[in-house]
Image (tube, rainbow, N blue to C red; front, side, top):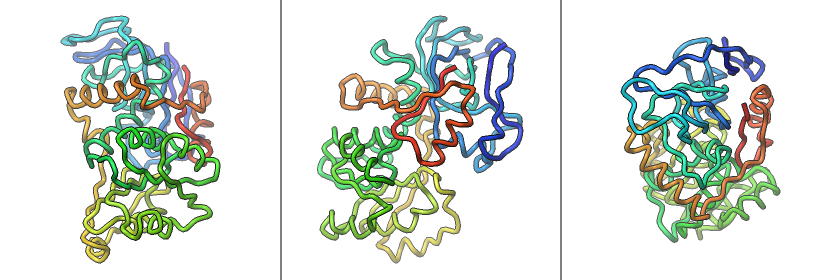
Length: 325
């Protein structure tokens, strides 16, 4: 038997329960991984709460982890038992001692990157890759706005943007988080609890605003973000930490300067094994070169997944959080 976290109904962290699950053989095209470390992400809370709907209930949770290949199904090539691997694109079920998933969702883990680093960085790092290198190809000298700059994705984005030579303005929720974002490479920071975000963006950009705004906060920051986008600029809404954005009036985009808006997902970019491999290779190179350092600030035993989610949702975390099976 194997320990895993699951939920049988939607709700708060209290609906998560640890159960014994049978260790099953992988099916055709699948690989069973024995997890060494598991990533915790905001999207996990969306599935738990019901904002995102899992395929069925009861459901496992989590889409990111790292470990070693324990068993291989029919038709799988490129992997062997004992291989060090990582994953960050699901399917759900990473919160457990074992996870069985399609081989196409796995990447081999270089020896230079630990299991904990990989579990902390796969989903967030691949997200940063598509945000800065695909959704908008960030250029040296560009000034962009990034919400939650001291969080999991933000911590990586600050470093990656700095390595490119771009000027990232990081929106944060405290003076301590402002210091952290600056230390990671943010060009400037805005403490949304004490400063007017729109006014500060106008000051920092000499009234030009930003060609791109990256917003994972959602409902509470939507209008603020729109007011920070330069004419014909792009708002990248890639998360719902404060709730989903609803009732969008497209006319507002016209009024504010012929703006563009996109709602990307990692699954939409890492949609093939080839795309995933290419994205992961660039992420691993950024880590190996030292341009991106993986910050793991919280570690919880798997059994304390509910408490880990409470802390994350309360905005009390910095960097990445991992679960240890």
